[in-house]
Length: 258
Ligand SMILES: [Fe+2]
Ligand SMILES: [Fe+2]
Image 1 (cartoon, protein in one colour):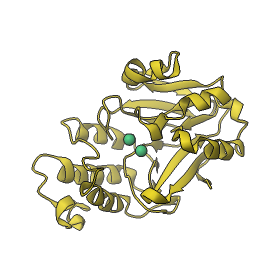
Image 2 (cartoon, rainbow, N blue to C red):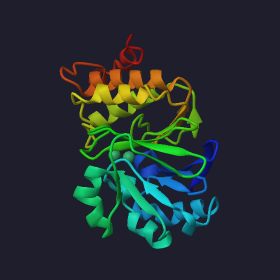
Image 3 (cartoon, helix red, strand yellow):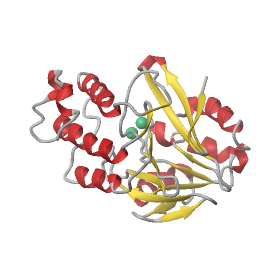
Image 4 (cartoon, helix red, strand yellow):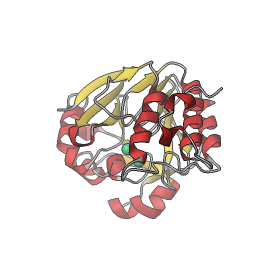
């Protein structure tokens, strides 16, 4: 059963825990004059998520559906949502629209360039282009400028049925999850590219107050520092040399890099 928690004013985290993967799938509904959803969720979860959304808004009033990159947990049930919310537009990166989404939905998505913004009423969102972060050529993230909530997709990925929001060490938890994944078929979760540090720095400069995380707890606290620590963890775990921590069990070393 989905659990709904308001993690910032009018920002609702709708969470489903999948025991088989020991993993939460979190979907964010932002209530405003024009309600917005970030992550549609998997097709198999659609009835449960729709039921949870229907307790917050009339589903047919949903006006914007957005996600980071083309992948089933991000946007697998897009067509199901468009079926029940026909007034909604689909907001994604230009690459996503061009290479996947327009074909997938059989109409034009609203493709945003880096820095493009739009209002949903009281709130204002900005598209942040982040190629290959967390993964996918088409990746981007959405930042709500008024309350400073960063909808950050797979960044800070944690396993377990954890609390909705924390001020604790989400980078440490994410490091532990990545170490486990490195030993199995989910290895190489993200590429550490020449753009990774730059993208994470760009996100930190937005000075988010809340990080809305797809897998695991959302975070409130010093988000800029968390993004800096995340870069250090990714660099050491996935970057050149990667001698470290992620494979040796010395995870703590990389949690407080400087
Ligand atoms: Fe992903
Ligand atoms: Fe994901």
